[in-house]
Length: 51
Image (cartoon, rainbow, N blue to C red; front, side, top):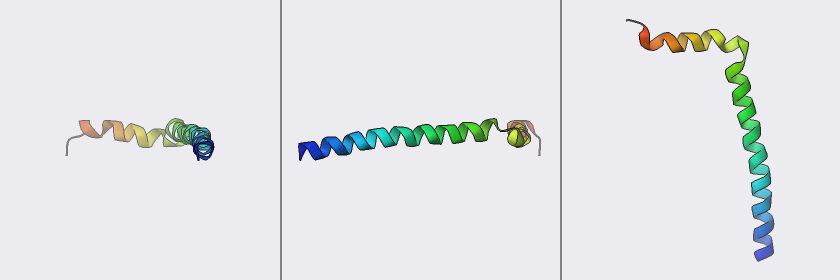
């Protein structure tokens, strides 16, 4: 049982790390993509707008 747990923990650590690195890369690409620049600039000015 101890060996099974160790193998499962190693699998989860390895693939979990790869999953979160991939997710971070996707979020970073989305945030820095030039096509989203205007959307983010509009959102940044939203608190300053008077309605």
